[in-house]
Image (tube, rainbow, N blue to C red):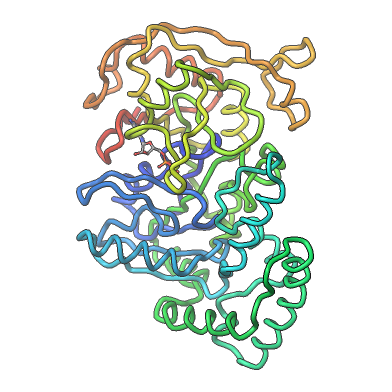
Length: 425
Ligand code: GDP
C-alpha cells in the first residue's frame, strides 16, 4: 500500500516527524519532488537532524530510501548528509536513486543567487539552492538526467556545449559574470558519476515490484499545498508540485496505488519567503510564538531564517487539505499553544467588503483581511499525554472547532517533536 505524507500549509508543518514516526511500519520511503531547498527536522534516539535530500525514514535499519525521478538531486549535499548521519551513529542508509532523476548543477545555484540579487527588493525569497533554475532547465530540456552520465561521452560533451552556449549569454550579458567552462562541467559530471554509480537504478520498476510483493511505501512531500506551482500562491511558490497526486509522477507509480493521504497541518501558521500571509502576526505577539514554536523556535531548517508567524488559518488549511485529496489530517505542534489565554483562529477572509471561506487566487489574496474567532486557551503542558480524552477540554474544543472548519478528519495529534509524541484518534 502507498501512503503519502504531505503539507497542508506553507511547509514546515512537521512532515519529517510524521514520516519518521510512520516509517516504523513501512518498507520504503520515497522523496518525489523538490530538492535541498527545504529541510525536515527530526528528533529521535540518534539526536536532532535536519534532512534536506534523504527521506525522513532513513533512521531505521529496515527501510529503503528512494530518491525518485521528480527530485532535484544535489549530489554533494546528499553525500554530505549521508556522511553526517553515519558519523553520528545512524546505520548506513539503504539508498536507491532514480536513473531518471536530474541533477542540480553548481551553476543552478549561481543563477539562483544572481537572479535574487538582480531582483533585489522584488525577490521571491529563494533559498538559493538552485531549484527554480533547475526545474526551468528540466522543462526547457537542457537539464542533465542521471542516465546521461552512463551513456556515450561524446553525446554528453555535445550537450554540455549546447547548454553552455545558452547559459553563457545570460551569465555574461545579464549578470556580468564569467562564462561557464565546458571542461569543468564535464569533470564535475564525471565526479558525480563515480559517487552515485552504486545507488542508481530504475526506481519506478523497483517500486512496481515492491508493490506486487505487498510492501508498505511512504511518499514524503516537501513544502505544502500553498507552495504548489499550480494551486499555491503563484508566483511565490516552489518549482515542483507539492501535491500527493504528483507523488505518482515523481516516484513513477500508478496513481491508484496511493490509498492514504496524510496531510500534515500545523496548529498555528508559519511561512518563509515572500507572498500574502493573511493571518500573519507581528511584534511581540509574533516573536513569542516564533520563540516557542516547533522544537526550539521557528527558524528555517535550511537557511536558519526566522519564519513569519500567524494564527491558524482555516481558509488556507481547508483549501490546502482539499487540494491534497486528504484522507487523514495529522495536526501538529499543538503543545506549543499551551501558553496562551486565548487563541485566535482565522475563519474567513474579507475581500472588498465580502466575507469568504474559499481560498482565492493571488490577486484577491493580496487584498484579504483576516476574520478571527477567538477560543479559550488551555494554559497547560500537554506533552506526554497519550489519549485524546486526557487532553484538556479547551484543547479538544480547539481541535474539534478546526476539524469542523476544514472538513477533514484529524486522526493524529502531535504534541511534541519526538517520535512518540502522538495521539491517535
Ligand atoms: P517539515 O519540513 O514539514 O518536516 O517541518 P520542519 O521540520 O521544518 O518543522 C517542524 C518543526 O517542528 C521541527 O523543528 C520539528 O521538530 C517540530 N515539531 C514537529 N512536530 C511537533 C510537535 O508536535 N510539537 C513540537 N513542539 N514541535 C514539533
